[in-house]
Image (cartoon, rainbow, N blue to C red):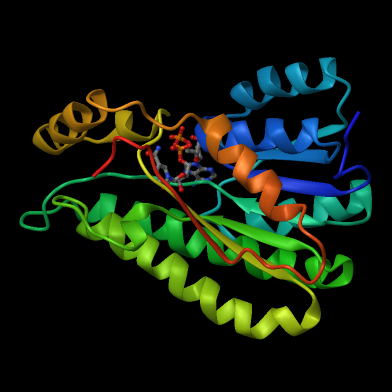
Length: 247
Ligand code: NDP
């Protein structure tokens, strides 16, 4: 059995669904002790059972990344329980597409607070522990961090922000042995689009997605496992992965 992450502790946000869940599964299969975090604890409970049945050591944490105190508590409970943190995967995110004109300010704030500030909070509180283990932080960004689409101004603003934050962080922590890894997936088959409230924007992206063989969470997860299992001196700082059929 090839277990390159045996003895390592990984925390994944947004682990109740989609890319976060697929990544947690893949990290667990590679031998990591896995901490799964999200708001919907009932989903985490079902997922925890699956992972435990496969022989993994799992901790589930109820977490809203928009609340700094919650983020700090989550990291503290990982350290209390396992004594270390090697990998943080920030996958919690929202994509509430819609035009800027007459835009829904509540949805703007939710996206910024989750995709950008939440990821920053988690990174900040995890950092002392990642420095101790010479670990890695994996940011789930998006192709939308490089090219904005119609109706995607706010979402792209958050993802551009993730990349800028991560590049600044890389300059700060590389010398301390911490790897900052930015993953930029294209269209993936998850719950993400289901939460869009602007009907025209939802229809437009659903129609585009239906025409392609979308990425599956497992496709993205295996690239993450690859990125976090490189030798100490090798940093995969940015990885763009898109469906072959995506423009
Ligand atoms: P999903 O909707 O399937 O998963 C999103 C996850 O984020 C859920 O587990 C949700 O859990 C969690 N989440 C949302 N808000 C919060 C919060 N405030 N606190 C904690 N957890 C939260 O979508 P994806 O898996 O597709 O999205 C994951 C990441 O991937 C996002 O950052 C997204 O932007 C990015 N991405 C997705 C692409 C796609 O096409 N699907 C393409 C490129 C990037 P809960 O509701 O239980 O809290």
